[in-house]
Amino acid sequence: MFQTRYSQKFGIRFVDLFYVSLMFAPAVKSLSSEQYIIGAILLLLSLFVLACSSGTAIWLSKAHLDIHTTAESARKTNVRHRRNVGKHMPCPYPDAWYTVALSAELKPGNIIDINVCGRALVVFRPKSGGKPSALDAYCSHLGAHLAHGGGSLVDDCIRCPFHGWCYDGNGKLVKTETGDAIPPGSDLKSWPVMERNGLVTVWMSAAGHNEKVVLSAEETMPWFEPPVFPELDGGDKAFDYHGFSEHSVPALIFELPENGADVGHLTALHNAFIVASLRPLLSHKWAASWQADEKEAHIARLKIKEFMVLLGLTLPGPVEVEITQCGPSQVYLDFAVPGIGRLIIIETVTPIAPTQMRVLHTCYASRHVPRLVAKTVLAAVNRAYEQDLPVWAHKRYEPAPRLTSSESAIKVYRNWVKQFIRSPYAISFEEAQKKQLKIDLGLPDDCSLNW
Image (cartoon, rainbow, N blue to C red; front, top):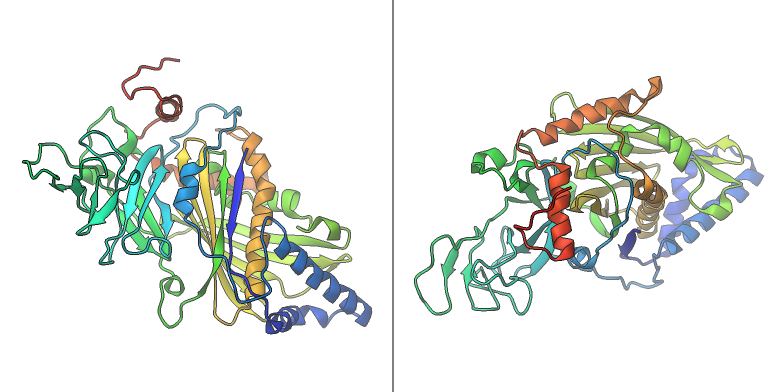
């Protein structure tokens, strides 16, 4: 139904346990000695249990698990789940910057293949370094995949393994192996690439997938940019990287970030403590608000306060999270942990197919934040996210939901996301499904599917 993968750096130090105890210092002032002792034991126990769960391992040494190639995993992942998707479905591939790789995994000379919005792409960084490029994956000669069978980089061009045709970063065919004249119309489509906040992203527009119309480059070019987080792009104040998790989710792209505006689901679904064995003693309490940004139309902001409740007593010193939504594909969660410091977790959503999303959660923290704390926060985010997975996997899309008076933010969100399908030529959900079905069944592109 859905798949999960983790890659995390670990290494517990004694100083980490000291920092963990400091984190709860503001809370203990109002507790009796008995409550303090019980609470300290339970909280440390929950940290350990949480960090050891969700498929995550802890090494009690300086060793760590290296980053695995996220794009390779996405290519191999083929999650399909039959569900009643609903009716009046919106375009499944809105205007957005879609994540294709982490900057750290796309080293000079590396080639990654990945499916994005039903398209096979190759993403590569020149051996000399510099900006990555993204091209359609199939050679215009005889259709070989540029990343399989020995595809390589030669003079900063990607070389087809079949006959040695070489394409530059703009998709231009620069030479053939035989030295013959270059046939007209041999260039490949290239896609706008932006590397920011530790992510390599590719711009795709809703209209760019519609093969029934011919649009100018200006009509499909990027019209907004992701926010800048200097802490994530190196420098003296750069945060440390602490790993990522990856989920494959059978859902429509708009359903995932809608959870930010759906404040009510926090209490209904996420109130119980994430470690099941400790739920009789511990629980969560939430306060949240969502609103579209008044200055930047493509940005929405969510503020969350998460309180811990121990034996019915709400502990002071909540974890505060400021969340920045950038379009439908990127969410930045900025955590302020009392007594510890800041952490940033980036959530990215990339459509592989109309109802199949690849979701990454990547964790960074200021340098004095203990590894154990960073790992625990990432594990907690994933535990909460995995509570949503079975709901997404079995729900249907409601184009006109019946909302209560306290759920007005959902209506505002629905209006907000419409701007990301601004072109009248945006591909429809039905056409996108037909294209994906042809790929799944191995049918020709020009095969007619009528339903």
